[in-house]
Image 1 (cartoon, each protein chain N blue to C red):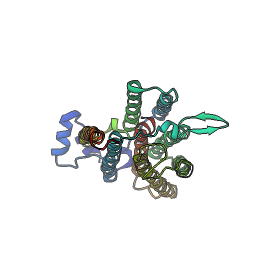
Image 2 (cartoon, rainbow over the protein chains, first blue to last red):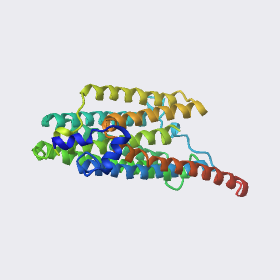
Image 3 (cartoon, rainbow over the protein chains, first blue to last red):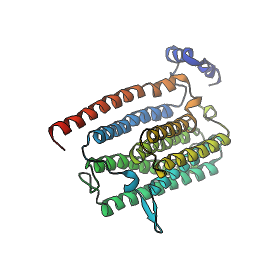
Length: 224
Length: 105
C-alpha cells in the first residue's frame, strides 16, 4: 500500500478533486469506517429532525412549557439541586468518550490488554448512563405524572418530545454498550490480529457520536 | 489496508480535550445553576454546546486529521438541516400566532 499512499497526499480542494477523479477509491480509509461515517451522517439527520420537531412544537405551544430546571431537580439531604442528575449523566458520558478515545489509541499501539480494559470501562460507564436514565424516567412517570399526552406542569407536548428524544438516545447508548462489549470480547480473543484494529476506531466513532448527540439534547432540552 | 494507516496521536491531546469538555459542561451547568435568563442564557448555552460538539468531532472522532473529501461529505449536508430549522422556526411561530388568534388558547 505504500506507493498508493502518496496519491492521497495533495492537500485542500485540489486534493478533493484528485481523490474523486483519479482511478482509486475516493476515501482513503477502510470501507467499514466510511460506512460508519455515512451511517452517522444519516443518524445526524434523524436526531436533527427530532430536535427540530421539538423546537417547532415548543414554539407553537400556547400553554407554558414546563421548566426543565425544576422538573429534573433533585432533593438531596434537604438541599434543592436543579438538574443534578442530568449533569452527572453528562459527566459520565463525557468520561466514557474519553476512555473510548484511549481504547482507540491503545488499539493502534497494539496493546490489546489495555484496549479491552478501556473498552470495558466505556461500556460500563454507558450502562450506568442508561441506568440513571431509567431512574430519571421512573421518577418522571411515577412521581411527576408525566405522560406522552399530558403532564401536570404545562404544555402536554413536553412528555411526547421528552420520551421520544431521550428514549431514542437511550436506545443508541444501549446498542452502543452491546456493540462495545462484542468488539471488546473479539479484541481480547485476538480476532483482529491479522485484520488490524480499525474496528476499534469505528466502534469509537459510534460511541463519540452518542456523546455528541447528548451535547445537543442537554443544551436544547434540559438547559433551554 | 494495514492497521498502520490508522489514526495515531499522543495520549496527551485526548486528556486535554477530556478536561476541556469537563470544564465546558460545568460552565453550561452553571448557566442553569445561576438561573441566567434571556439572550445571555441562550448565547452561552449555544457557545458551550458548539465548542463541545466541535471538540468531540474534531479531536475524538479525528475529523481534523481526515482528508477534505471526507470533511465535505460530512459537513456540507448539515446546511440542509440549518434550512429545515429555519423553516420550522418560521412555521412554529406562525402556528402559535394563529392559535392565539383563532382558538383563544
